[in-house]
Amino acid sequence: MAMEEKKVYVKDARNGKGAFARKKILPEKMILEIKGVFLTCNEDDDIDEETRNNTFRYDDDLYISPGKDIANFINHSCEPNAKVVKKNKKLFIYSILPILKDEEVLFDYSTILARDDVWEMECNCGSQKCRKVVKQFKKLPLKLKEKYIKEEIVPDFILKI
Ligand SMILES: [Zn+2]
Image (cartoon, rainbow, N blue to C red; front, top):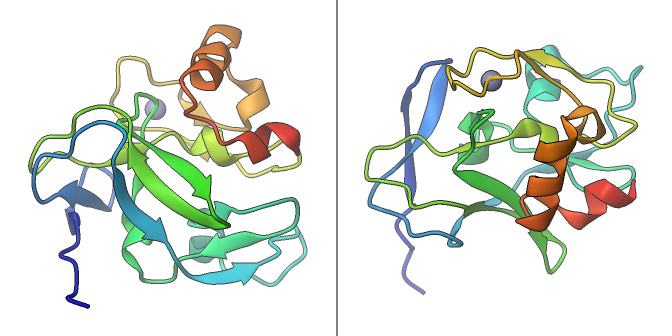
């Protein structure tokens, strides 16, 4: 099978490195699979800060750490153009909106922070809708939670944890 060209590339972004669209991406398209190693990420686990900051919630107990894989470079925005989708026991990044060539692919980290996730991050995403702090989905403003649920931007399993 031919190697599929990656839909994103990594370059310097507003906050560190980011993942950018190689070509225009239409809405509701799979951008990449989030691959890596599974971790538990308990508070007392010996995990370095950078790794912890870049994990993706997978289920009740597990997180995926992408290491240096491309998913590691996808940044947060309070006004995202992409989302995390769980399908066939795998995690993916999908577009929400049309993403233009050379536009950064961004998802809302709060959409993968469940009620037992204590991790928080100060936000400097630059959006006019910036919430200044990234925290659990359940702590988002009610209107935004409703929008994310209705538009299926938050994965079901996050709502069930
Ligand atoms: Zn923000």
